[in-house]
Length: 338
Image (tube, rainbow, N blue to C red; front, side, top):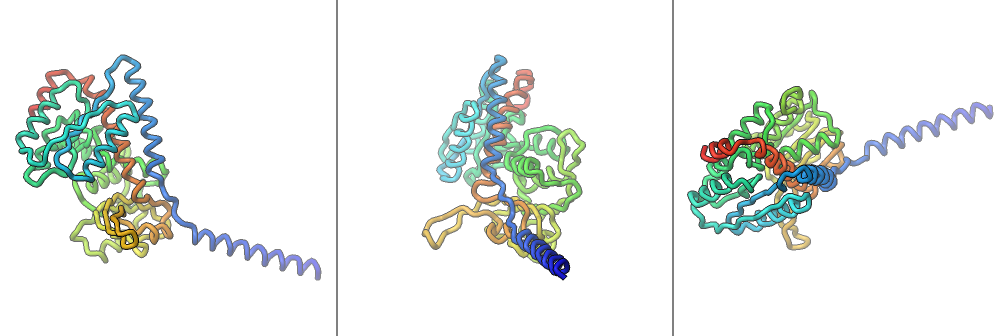
């Protein structure tokens, strides 16, 4: 009898332990991916790359940033970029122009920077004043210096799975997914947002062939946009293994829209009024506190995709410096005038 009682007690303890394990697993929150830590890792790689490049007799890479107008957010972003450049050993300059600059005057400035052999990477900070055609300006930057990856040639090469200058934010999302070990092959992905600089390139990187020159994620990708009804979006996100929110809508993605164990990457940057402090604060497109209860991985805002964008821009600047070394001067002139 004593032996039987001992066995019963042992079984009860085992059942209790299994139940406790199950309950703790169900309550486990998502791993919060630190974009800052990953960006530091990438910047260390960039710093080593720059020093190796310079030590072999090459000129230090140089980044020129054109900043038009007084947009406070743009000034903050540009400051972050130039600080990151200094951190990894890239020289940089910020060229300030008033918001009243004409489109032709801006085009002339870009032409001069395109033909300046001392400039390796060139970007024009967006958004621009309404009287300036952003697409025309992006296409005026020489593809070989286009560290934003916005020139139509670089976009086309990306869509054809060829090596090119990738847009920094989509490349940052791609690196977050890869370096975190989130599987993509054969997985269902929803990208909320179809912008040409963020949503579309993210979808291209995730769905394209992993065997090509510029390897992709081999995922099945659904893209939603402003005309996708919320109930239809929910139907797609509920079966998605990865959700990338890049629509610019606060709290677009909520916990009821996410399946258990999904990875959620929040690209949104929205300034909303905080009634408790009376000040504006940054939030993403995802209800962070709610979704983290169901997801396996999640990125915060701020501190998620943002730092990765700046880090990938440094990688592109180094790539631009190395590409220019291999480009004959006459090719530079031809590209600049195209």
